[in-house]
Length: 419
Image 1 (cartoon, rainbow, N blue to C red):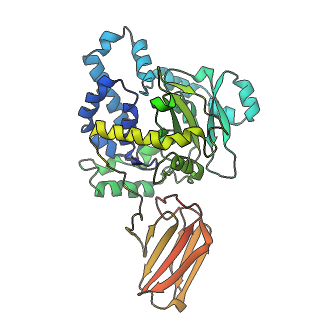
Image 2: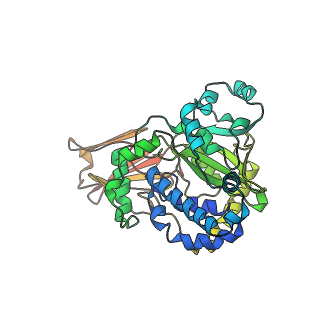
Image 3: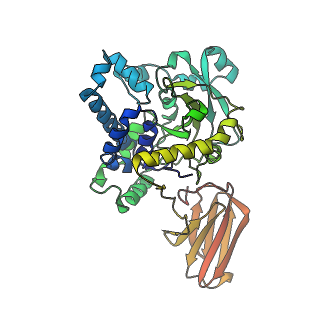
């Protein structure tokens, strides 16, 4: 299936967010979606690396809809602001009120308190609750049951607000990585007309300090699944924090038909949302719903493909695909002193101007590569992900040193070669 967007590519996330929200809108909004698509192009291009700009785009998007409603039938349909707010949240529009901000600043995080308990104690403390899952990035830790208490429920999806504080972990944005990603987007022309100086680590860190959540659809609501969508809730700037990849979450997305598999960083939550007759959270059970081959996963490939075809029709975007990560599709990525490519199974590193294999010493470790030629260190890397040392080889051919490293987790695309 065609996959729009990778979670770690924040500059392009709003593009997918707009299409996701489109599935929650009543039919009469299809024309306004088409009309606003061009206006959203700038915002859709900047969301790979800046939650600040993502919020700007979302607020602009909400403004377009609020303006449309105000000028047409919205005011004629609802009698007061409470009814309007309920309608928006019922249809997937995230709205933050002054009361929400006050509550966040004055209460201790319920999700943090819950995770400090055992699963049994957490359930006892929240008897009328909805189950969802925590998938740690550390594969040595089990997938954990979490509970959305009745007190946290409201119209719409309550999980983004409930888990938001979990991602306020105090980890700073990596300014060099932010700069590299921004430069890549500017050079591709996606950010033409924007002042690059406004994309700063300090502004990003101010927003990230409060926690920031992205919702990624594993399967979209449809008539074939009772309008029940399954979503991953992740740290919106996890990639820029250099959090470790979440292999299990990526594999789950692959089971749902995403190819290549999206990369997720750090711990993630997974929950289920029913969108009809009103949007609300429903149970997602650890075990039955998280095991490979779960019924909803088996249906997800076809359901996501049907959803994508419909979105292509609505947006006139045809078979457009998301640009791959560095080193993919046989296009080498040049670095300081070497270049590299990757496929599903291996990463290949090439060092130029090497003719005598007797002068070469390559040291492979599970998370690092060191290359010494004639006593000079040419490459010394802490790798983005682990490699299988037993599957690594090197050879000298045509004046180049060619190194092949087997990925420990095949099928996972590396967004960069260094950690």
